[in-house]
Image (tube, rainbow, N blue to C red; front, side, top):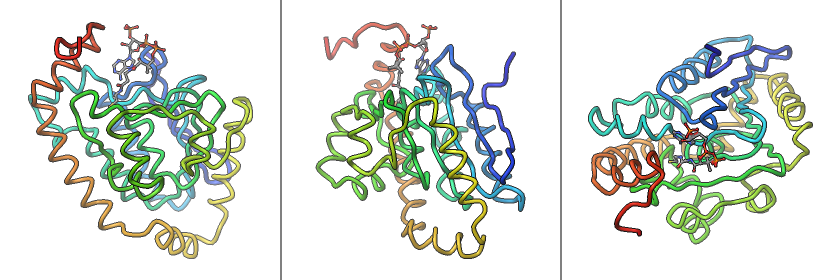
Length: 255
Ligand code: COA
């Protein structure tokens, strides 16, 4: 079986993390979170790695957390999940991160981008954060980072009403640096990663920390969201909606 996350160290100090589960639109399983978490932790520990690039497959960045896995977490709790372990690592990663978003970026596929230092998108990019629609709450500090980026009213549309964003609007809102033809996306993301990796590491790390602002707050919000997420995941309203997606029927309450 092909690896669902491929880790490739490229020339120029760029570590490429490629999601590779196209048959499920790159929905993320526990094993995929574990692989990404380890790749980020290793990047921080390695002098050879100076930047990380996240990529998906043509037409799909990620459909977010595997919803069947979410249903499983209802028993074990979100707090013990590989998803939360990945999110914690993502929030504290010191290595600069770049995202190359082609096609759908749902849930964590979109909120992951809020932690990236640079984000490039193809014209087909579609960001969507349907947490509340699924009976859940925002994660990965998106309830803090998104209002900071786009303002509270717009964040409310995106996080409470799950309004999708296309590539141009995501760029206009400052969530994407540039929209590029799909066949130029990876080249640009990797080239920008290599530029970051070539900078003096001390100056880069200090400047990055200043640009990113209140790190302690980001980590505190990750934990606060996780508590609410855990509660919601055990609720009948989320279980009903997750089951509805998996069986592709409408939940009774929204029929
Ligand atoms: N978890 C588990 N499986 C998923 C998934 C997810 N998040 N997203 C897609 N899949 C699976 C589908 O069940 C389907 O599997 P099947 O072929 O065995 O039936 C396969 O991936 C292809 O998905 P499909 O829905 O047919 O593709 P599409 O192009 O019509 O739609 C999406 C793509 C991403 C818009 C749609 O799949 C979707 O809305 N997924 C859920 C996204 C989501 O809510 N994520 C969590 C956010 S918190």
